[in-house]
Amino acid sequence: SVVWSKPLESSDLKLPVSVKYKDLVKWFDGDDQKAQMYNPHLTFKVIKKGMAIPARTVVAVPKDKYNIALIALAQKGRSIASDH
Image (cartoon, rainbow, N blue to C red):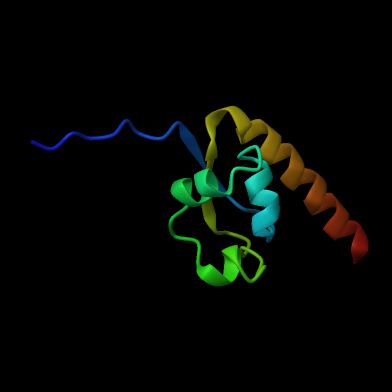
């Protein structure tokens, strides 16, 4: 018989700005494997080559880190806006 795993405790987040994979991993307490497990759609170029995850990409983040991610993205958005 098939035994289903429990659903991941995650929230989907549509990125308002591009984000580096290393910054995404911070929302997983630095756990690279966990970040990849929650986001199997991310490509080798993003994970290993350091290519930015484009704005408007939907990523999964742990539910308990969702607000932290939103704050970090808001700060990143403000710093980008002030660069122009």
